Length: 313
Image 1: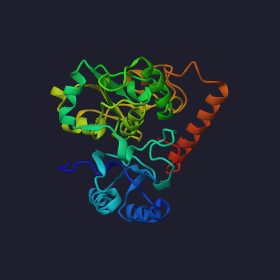
Image 2 (image 1 turned 90 degrees about the vertical axis):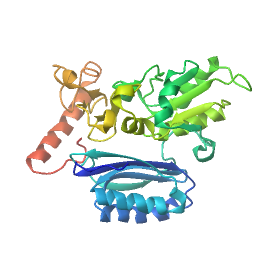
Image 3 (image 1 turned 120 degrees about the horizontal axis):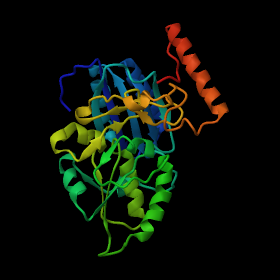
Image 4 (image 1 turned 60 degrees about the vertical axis):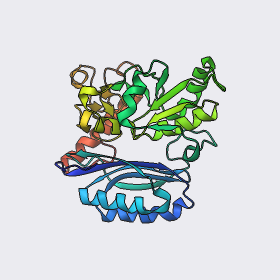
C-alpha cells in the first residue's frame, strides 16, 4: 500500500503460514528489531508461521516489514496497512505459540493445503454467485457489526468452535468427484479463513476459496460504491472497528461480553463502561460485576496518576 501518511501511527497486520524451524531462536531477533524501531503490538511465532499486528512510526514499520520479508521463511508475507491517530497497543511482545491462529486440530497444514486465493477485486463475483456457499469464519461478536451480503454466520465464540460447526454443517453437503459444492470463506485479515480452507479441504471438499488479505484488504481496495460489504469490520485493538478505506469507526467495546457498541448502545441506561452493556446487562452475576467494577476503578485511578493501566482499552 502506497499512501501519504496523515496519522502519526502506521499499523501493519501481517501473517504467513510457513515452516519455521526454530521459533525460539528467532524470537529475540524479531523483538529487538521491533523495539529498536519504536513498534508496539504482538507478533506470534510458531512452527506453522508468523502472525501479528504492530504499530509505530511509518519508517519504523517499513523497516521491520522489509526485514521480515527479506528472511527466506517469510517471503510472501501478507501485510495489510492502516493508520491510527493514537497508539493502539501498550507494549511490544513476541510470543511463542503452538499455532499462529488457534484451531486446536492437529495436522491441519495451511502452508501446503490451503484453498485458492481470490483477489479483493474479484470477490464481488464470488459473493454474487448463487451456487457458492459463503461462510464468515469470524466470531459472532465480530459478525454483529458487519459482513458480506448473503454470508453464513456460524455463530461461534472462538475459532476453536469452527471445526465442530463445519462438521455438523457439512453433513448436508454433497462431496466427492463431480458433486463438490463451491465454498468460499473470509475473515478479518485472511489468516483464519486460510486455515479454515485447509481444514475444509481435509474433510473432502475440493472447490474451496478464500478472500486474499481478508476483509481489511477488501475495504482498502474496493470502493464503497461498488462494495458488497455491509457495516464495519471489527478489530482486536483500541480502534475497535474500521470501515471502507480503513477509516476508523465510531465504536467502543464492552469489556464484559466483548460486543462492539455503537453510539445508540452507548447511550442506553444498560451501558456501564467497563462493566455491562445492553447485550450482557441481564446475564452477568454480581461477582462478575464486582470484578469488572474493580478493574474499571483501577483504570480510572491509573489515569488520575498519569499512568497506563495494562488492562485498559
